[in-house]
Length: 417
Length: 158
Image (cartoon, rainbow over the protein chains, first blue to last red):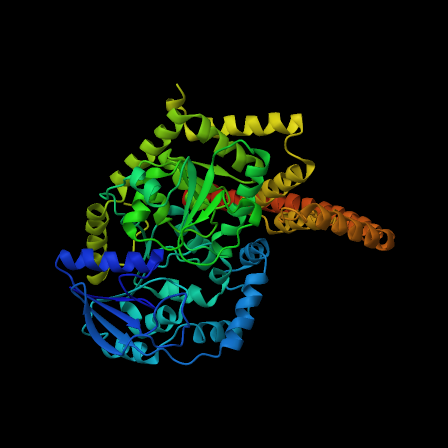
């Protein structure tokens, strides 16, 4: 069976949940006998300029997979930024209320939506390739949902389009242009029940989704002591791992942690940040908040083992790979109660706590710090949950079965695995 | 013992600590206000009624005269900066307060009126649903009667 994954940028070193999932899923499927290739643009990654063609156009072999790169088109950045700015400034509560009126209600006009998609990452060459090869490829798998490569690519793929949307409850998701894309797709692979419910609520798609989850590396070694020594960290710490920006709520975590240190001056707790992106740390707290920047995977896995807990303050998660990895290392999670996905996983697995405001954040930290037995028990329950449900073997077998079914003409099924 | 606690039980212990410390004054009125807003938001997210949801949003924002927390992260100059900011806000407040208070009062009464209407709409919707159920029940009974014995088939249509 011939599969093509379509993603805006691709490479072994690119950080990001969707990028990492695409690469690992493609490798796992190839190892199980599928004929898999990657279709992408020449853009380097999410953080880079989306019209700069960093890689040469053409095909290359990366880790045994054929990667075909196509030039990204020039963008009208001013138009994109203006629309993007408006979307970002629209409150989520307003957007949610708007969508309850109708599935087609949008904060933008149809023209603005079209401009937004067209002026994001786009490659006419990539779309042309998909259209020209639609008959020879069994399924095109698009990941994630919001970029031009997915929107126009899925139009070109027609009935062979499959989405792994990585959908979050975020402002972009409220554009009505995505509704048709979700409903037209042969199948949609969801990471969590909350993500699937969100897609139903936003787009009214009910009959083509499969709740599958996402593969997680669970067999890694995690040496906490090695991490502490390498980075000269003494004492307990809470860990943040991932891109550091406002959409991930990193600023809230820093603000709450600074207040926590102010209220608990005797506490030895530190906050360790890991991942790309700049961050502003108040001068008074530079010793308490340590930003290690982007680290290799080995360091990340060691950090999980060293941390008292992993804090995931983001409201925009469709799965949270870092939370799953921390659980695999036996480390409990502390998440924002406003994110249905991460809070739902914490309750379901029994592996983490959640906060909706500063007092709860502070008291959760104090509880975890003072109750080692409970902390370990939370970590163990999280570990059992992720190893039992999301190991690569288990996930890939299920995905392979789903893709075969869709190739034979089935539409998705709502039945969860 | 604590190893056996579920997430819900731990969260209840956490909330109990929050309540105790609020009573002791550890968490300030600002914290309590933030808590109230956060709970309102999460409650609103669960609400499926559009009108009720919009009213809740209005209720959250009607009083814009409440001063935001004035803080500064600067270690040495922080106290001075906070004092200057507070002075500025107080001075501006003296001039603008009478006008703003009238606006806030108007907002408050307007939201009350909308809330009354929202309640009325909700009650009417419920009544409408009940009536529809009664009507469809009657129609079903009619059909049942029509499919039954021939001499009784006309009675259900009344």
